[in-house]
Length: 255
Picture 1 (cartoon, rainbow, N blue to C red):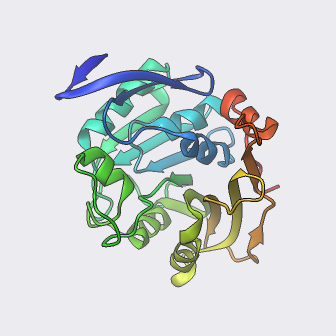
Picture 2 (cartoon, one colour; picture 1 turned 45 degrees about the vertical axis):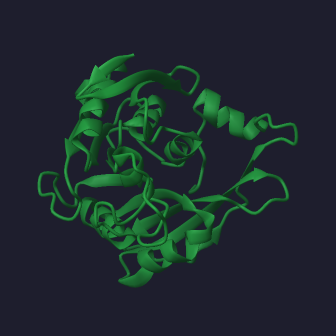
């Protein structure tokens, strides 16, 4: 462990050690949501990818582990996390491909508009005013809207501004907020060609998470994918989930 700006830092890994991470001991931690989000992003050589609300860079670094011939930019409202993300890029030997910035998506002017082939995001799951924020600042900002004053619509609007025409937005969210996500994506025809990919913890249960992919100003009918069951009845990962979590396999949403 070490200290960073009065934060106690722990060292962890994702993808069976392929991605090394420094993270605050207390607060929001990278989870399987992070890995599934990264797995659902289709990237090609020389793609420019933006991670909005990047935290310590975990999702972006998982994407790079699948294709090292891309560039990754990240932004987070919490400076300490953006600083740790830069350290994590160095720890994984990809500093030349990564840039991480502190900034508020409602006012940021550093990152160019209409620049990126893909945007990824894991926005706060809890709607502002519907929950009691955690007393831990990092966890409160990561989990709930309203702490930074940015709403889900602000996050989607920001992604739209940064993407090239036809670029893809991929996000993961709670399944019970799928209606909110779709409403925001299509509200001003910012996005279309939606693909919804449910994640079930166990077979026969309601989905807890959904991955949603959309394209900037492209309009094809919505597609609901079969999705994935994550755990077997005994609690072990299914073969499909294990390939993603351990072997850095991808989730193919678009052919």
